[in-house]
Length: 174
Image 1 (tube, rainbow, N blue to C red):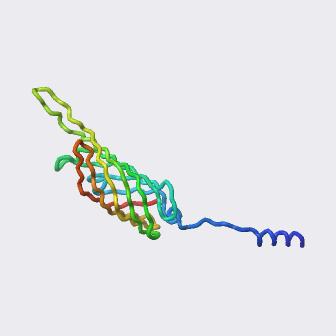
Image 2: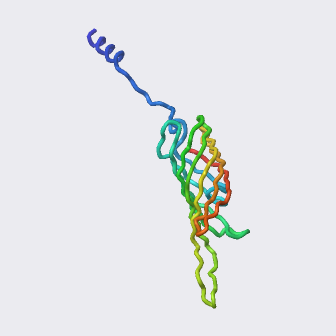
Image 3: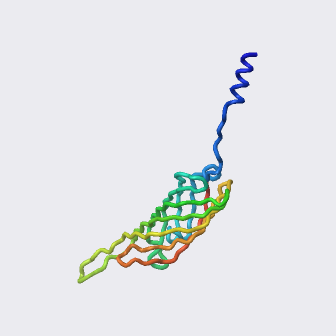
C-alpha cells in the first residue's frame, strides 16, 4: 500500500511539459528540392533548400542550386549557381510568405575574346548578379512544394542595373 501511495503522489504532483507545435519545423519538413523557371536561376535550374532555425512561425533557411542561362538567344551557354538566405513566414500550416537575399554566380562557357589590333584580349567570363525575393510558398504535408515570386535582379557591374524578374518553382519537401 505504501508503494501505491508513493507512485500516486509522484504521478499526481509532477509537472509534465510537452513541445509546442507552433513552430514551422513541427509542421513542415526541413529540406526541399525544386525545379525553378526564372527566379534566381535566371532561366532554369535545380535548387536544394535547408531550414536552419525556427522561431515560432518564422523559419530562417538557405538554398543553393545549379542551372543554365543564356546571354544570346538560342543557346544555353551560361552556368549559374544561385545562393540565397531567406525568411519563411508561416501564415498557416501550408501557406507561407518568403523574403530573401542572394547572389547568382554566372560563368559564360563560350564568350569569345575580343581581338584588338590582331591580339586576343580575353573578356570576363565571370559575373555576379544579386537579387531579392518576395514570394508565396505552398507546401503540403505529402511533400508537394509550389513557389512563385518576384526576384528583381541587380547587376553588380560598374553601372548597377535593376531588372524586374520573377520565377516559379515546383518541387518536393522532405
